[in-house]
Picture: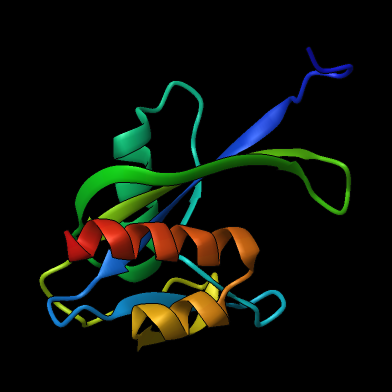
Length: 134
C-alpha cells in the first residue's frame, strides 16, 4: 500500500504508424521538446474516444486505435500527479495539420522515434513496434 495515494491527471497518447512503418512525433510550442500526439482525458470521457479526439485536434489525422502498449504513473516537476496511457495506432495518410500546441512534426523510423523521445514515450514506441511487427 502506498503512503500517499496518487491523484492524477490522465494523459492519453498514440504511437501512430504510417503505412510505411514510420512513427509520428510532434514538437511542442511551449518548450520545443518532442512528444507523441495526445493529451488529457476529460471528465466522464471514454478513454478511446478521448485519445482519438486529442490526436485529431493536434494532428488532423484519423486514427485506427489499437491496444494500450504502455502505462505509468508519476509526479511532474510541480509535484502534480500524472497517469499516462500510450496506445498503438495506425493512420492511412501522412498529411499532418498541427494545432497551436505544436510547432513541428516528423515521421521517423520507430528506432529514431525511440531515441528522440523521453524515457516513457520512447518505451511506448518500443512496445508499439513489437505489436506492429507481429
